[in-house]
Length: 393
Image (tube, rainbow, N blue to C red; front, side):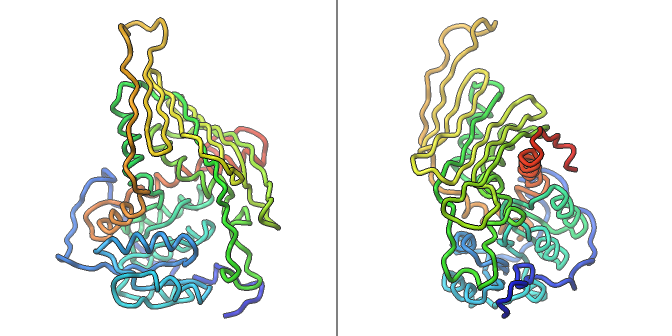
């Protein structure tokens, strides 16, 4: 394997797979079961493309999903594959591939997990779909709405399933939050104040990249910066809660870079989004925070919810002078949150997708909505103006 500067993660994939045909996508409730036949006790074989740091969490989760075996690993950094293979606790030893097109020729693979840098998600996902594989694609779905649209069209052509890796949709604690906003007497959602204030912008270990291969998180065009990298998770949760289309976005972002050098990717920024239902999201992300995280706060007409620190607090109130409200509002509630980050749950759900029992969730259109906000935020920060989401396609 070459270590020259032209060597890049794009070498994962050849061009022989482009153009395979398919037809229309299944429709209906994304969480509903749909027709499909599976053999009792069948083990579905999955290939992982991208053996970087995130793959460790996915492999650890799949160790707890009995219906899926990891049968293949693919990465251009050769020594990463045996390292990740040591983490696999069940099934035969996986086969190793340096190029995705070679792995996709492995006929016994039913599914592919795309855990490569964001700028490669479209290319790797479409190749896997057109090779007849179901796909789990890590967040963000892609870096542009145009790329998301191509991925959605590939799902429509191939009839294969595409699940996006925003695991909070499957996480027990976030389900408690969404259930409270949906079913408690807090009224219409008006505004959210969300954050990712963390000090964990990871410096790669010396052996992670060959000489001449840049750490992708340092490159704005490859990673999208802090809004895509960290913000995609809570922005997706906000989309889930607001249950409305984003309309416009404004953002200011910057590069501080005290720890990592030669980088143009944003490491702090703020984003304000207006939705079609009139609600507003305010998001802030920064990777130079060393204190406790602030709770995420959701303001509703009749209540305020704060989520964080292992608990959900709900405080009720009535706007003064509003007809129909008599007596004291309900007493405040503090609910402990269940544990679990949602990664095991999302991979268990994906196993049911591969088995033909459920439709992918979150799917491409849901993943695209987050990218609309992230791409709009980046454009806003560059052009110094509010961006209309409809301009992004």
